[in-house]
Length: 314
Image 1 (cartoon, one colour):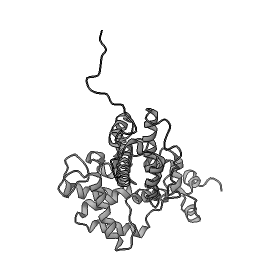
Image 2 (cartoon, helix red, strand yellow):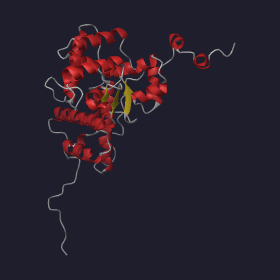
Image 3 (cartoon, one colour):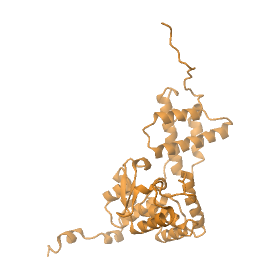
Image 4 (tube, helix red, strand yellow):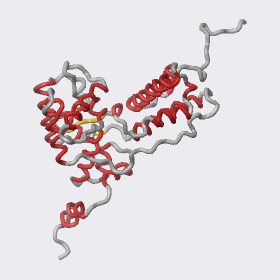
């Protein structure tokens, strides 16, 4: 019996494998990653590849995934702490995959220090700024749509990517709730359903019935009636931020979520309920939004004993 051979030449992956090809293999092997996590990782890999190409004058290879290159890449993001931290995590995952598959003899990024995130309690928008943000969104060329985006993001404490991936079928205006599907959320806590504030319902009702139409598909559509790309959707926030600069408001789409969660806490919603609405896996994360109770906070807490039992002690 003759020796069987492969019908095509078999080339093992090595340090000289292109970064693009390595990332494609990583993609196939990490089928367990959530789509949102995978999207974030691949943006990091793409930026790192462009960085290496600028620095070395050639296409990036897997062997370029070493501590000196990664530290230099992260150093250019030093003033964007969250991005630097997330990029480091993504590149570490790729390095660990390559090490596990025997391409690196040992983890090349084991000595790379994970950048610290911003830390501390997230800063919500001031109440006056919220009114200015909604007014600026309403004044845009696509006011009903943009106002609905902002009000829903603030009232339901959604991440920008979660707003972008909402479908019309995720929203029930009659009963007043929306669902963030498992495949569209960054959280490990799973799918969650959030009650809609009456003003969010009104904004969505106007947008859907007077502008968008009721066919199923992505909830928020471009000017041509098409689905947004992620970056096309984020450009909506960039334009809003530019208009708000002239009004002295520092706008970031990610602060809508922090504002919404903080407002639930301010309104007296129990911490464990806030945890569920926000999609936090751990109550420790939720606790960051609660912070220390001030005397004003204490004064707003209803008297549970008297409310439940009435006059019983005297």
